[in-house]
Image (cartoon, rainbow, N blue to C red; front, side, top):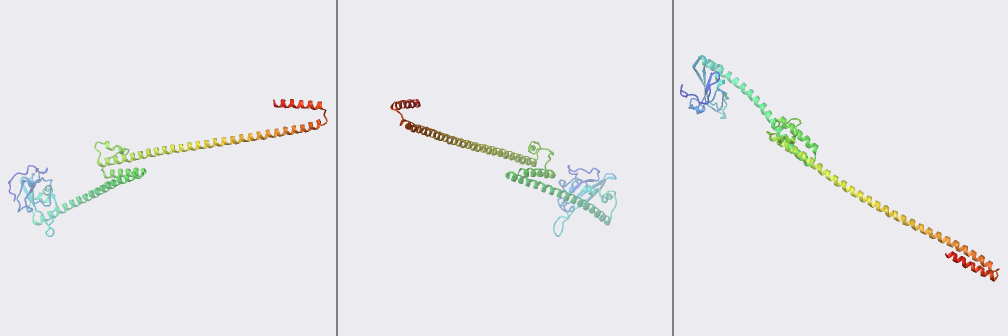
Length: 327
């Protein structure tokens, strides 16, 4: 065991600020009475002593007497049924500042019953403390679990955004990226100003992994949208050009058909005019022939009653009229 003045405290161990605690003196065994004290096992007063360490807290009263020293020993407590350590953790500052040790440092002699009452009160205080710490730890674990869930859900949304890009659903993609941003913000893994352009997050000197992921997916979403708009514009231009070509071809064909129809009508009108002219000419000639025939008949009737000299004169007149007509 420990012997008075056996050695100085380990160089890394400092006394408590109120000088009521010196250090934790650890042993090589779970039972301080059976183990050997080693300087390497010393711990500071504020350091938590684990439940599987054996040793003692060295306490002193620097006010009443620098020589007044109390050592409170602690052994590992193991369940006989399960073999699991069941002792609470503690710090030597807590032990040395307890009413029990303070009374001992002042020289009070405590009965076994008093020590048990002090020990029970200290155990209840430690239990309350650990219950409060357990509650705080539970709250923190719930917060961490919620944070991890939010982060995972946001990660899943990034995959959904990829699907929205593939299906050209830009509105859904923008909605999902905003949801992912809000969830990452609530999870505390990104710090993005409200009006920050997500595509430029990669420019931040200390951009987080999630901020870089948001920047990449936002840039991919906008680039895919712009590419699709350019593709649609090109397709529209080609469709307009094809429609114009077809319209031009139709107009050209219509004009050609109209021209052919006009030429056909002109040809038919000309043929009709030629027929009319021929018919008029034939009618005029027939009329002239009829007149000549009537004249010839009349002359023939008159010649029956003419003398030879009159007949000769009539023949000469007929020749002159015929030549005049031919001219």
